[in-house]
Length: 198
Length: 336
Image 1 (tube, each protein chain N blue to C red):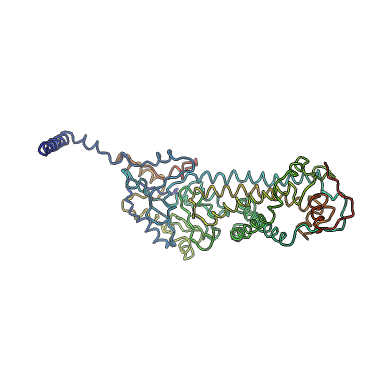
Image 2 (cartoon, each protein chain N blue to C red; image 1 turned 30 degrees about the horizontal axis):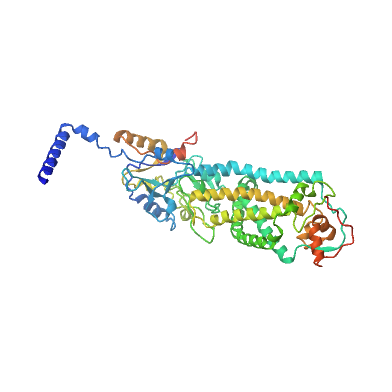
């Protein structure tokens, strides 16, 4: 099985936010939650770059490490998923996540956060693949249909890449070689480099 | 002189054109659209401790503008590696200490035996406040420990589903019982502060080790001795720290971004471990550790001999006010 990853080529990102919108629409993400977002660094200055960021599906994921009820699991493809049935909405994954991926619908007073929601790499959750129960909690399971995440699939400049980590890294390196510049594989060092297995 | 200026412009334009046509390759190379482009590596290397890479975002959630916050790894390290050591040393250490103390010193008896005469030590309102705060504290402590260590200690026993259901209720209990706990804290502060101001007697009490190390030694004390004052101030200071840090965790993001909230959880967790260890000692001495002590918070009335041994000056004050029976049993002699 391939180890799937996301890669955002910031030199190609035009901050159109289509990935954000596509994700929200595909999964019927609740109001106030964005599984994917586009952040512009040095906005308005020469050399500004926009980066599309969601859950990076880290190797040795920090969210899974700190979860008090151990609701996370990693699939054979390296996708980090979680069970909303087990999640207690404590917020620990949000503190540990380097990318601000976990988010919580506000369901009540005080700290009563709802079940955590984050990018699933369009791979659903622990429920049986492509069932209404899975869709209601986690959104579409495109991976089960043999499709890649929608955000990357519909990126107009092919800035956002999804797929086998080795292949998308190769594509990015080729681009950098050809055009002579690249602002980096955003988040990769943080998400994958700390572990010997990458 | 406009004419000479336009001449200069024309001359410059001609030179630029000449340069471009003569060296097309050089002209292309001199234009570098990415020379100033932000580099992730540079940004990461320039980050200071606890800093994050952030930018501008077009959605209303300001927290989403943080792109990468490597400090999350430090928080994870604290939660997974440091907190179990802090909590383990504090709680298991205190348990061991109390067990050794009980084995060596045994239960502290009333030297002159029970007189059978009672004296009122805590009125019903004081006891209510104590037990309100105490019962909240115990549930807050257990549900807090469950969040910190339940995954290791309890989850394997019951399985993921049952543990998750239990933890959900524990979390709600933790969120909501925080308020009666804070209320009890304020009331305790108001009703007992006057008896808990440190004084000269406390120095003497501490010098003599509170008389708990040797049989029959009882330094004089008013309503609260130095040990009890220590517990009072530990509860007040610890309670305030827990309340303030907990308050901001209960209302996430109101004043805080993710970095502040990480710091608040660290404060909340470390103070909690020390607080729990301190309260364990308090529970020990109030129940198993000392004969006759539990009555003070149980029925509110303690035996006169117990009171004379541990709070000699307080008994005298109460007797002077005519609110206490004057016992006929021999008085405990202060150890000085």
